[in-house]
Image (cartoon, rainbow, N blue to C red):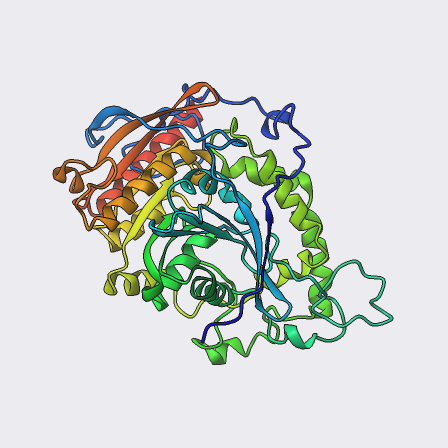
Length: 471
């Protein structure tokens, strides 16, 4: 049964860029020359943590194809860029989901849905909505408990003893609408499922970064009829600390609290300490510095949006709920197996220089899905869609075109059928703000076993350690 929709839309506006003059990263560090540090590929195909390390030359280096020039992004703020509309959808009473959309006039094109990573929201896909919205219908949503999908009222009752608290979720009792509310991966899967059924109303291509990648795969495993294909961008292969009550009921009973509201007193004090650190602007700055490989990337807007979300009165309790929520009913690997069995098309695009979800994890996915195209991008970190959107958008267009044409159009960068079996590398050039940029994409074939890749990874890692120690 289709639920009633309550949609409230407004024109998209950007937050104030209070570090416009110098740039967020430039406050503390010197920006890299993007051309000088663009190509940092090793034969292992797995990223080292440190940027600017010399490449490893071995006999197993894949052949480098001729350089390819791809289109630049459309300039923002004019009619060349697809406008973004900000909306709210009332999923359940008092539970509103914020999302953004673009390109709704492209009725003959397939729909795309973008799922964000932890701590960010739909704003992290601005470069996709502005660009891809010119050809496709595109949505990006905020997971409940994050971004602008935080509650509009306190989920707990306020008493005389708690009336002076500025934070929500610490009251005496749970409000009726928030009974059993836990910001878990199962809740997010249900949220995305209902969003597709009630807002998009047809199967979609789902693109997920980090946490969003896990949710995308998890949804596809249970609801393949809603998914045309899944694109994983440095997808995290694990989420949640506590056992799932459905999968491990006896073990779950050992944990009396699993993310519900209100927070227990012992959890409140610990949350306040951790949240004070996690929401500090300097801490957020340092995290962004870790996950972006090219520190010349402008992240002021992303920084501002994250800060804005941390100032919401429900932010700290929501953070505690997320951290203590149960794991998914099935694991990431089990979701992969289900998707493979059900024939869900999957594409992998991983930033090579991610210190958190390095490409070793992507190679494990590739081992389970040898026919899935795997594009490793460097320089790019945990968020390749924001760091090198020109490249990610180009690959997205090509992969969707291949799926929609049932293989009549070749996969991006794989025009020769022989390239599907063997590893290849290709330099990709594009223009951004008048300057030429260069990245290298390594495409993994189907022939090399995971053990061979692990061996290459270990050789790469040892060589990097030797190089670092000698410097």
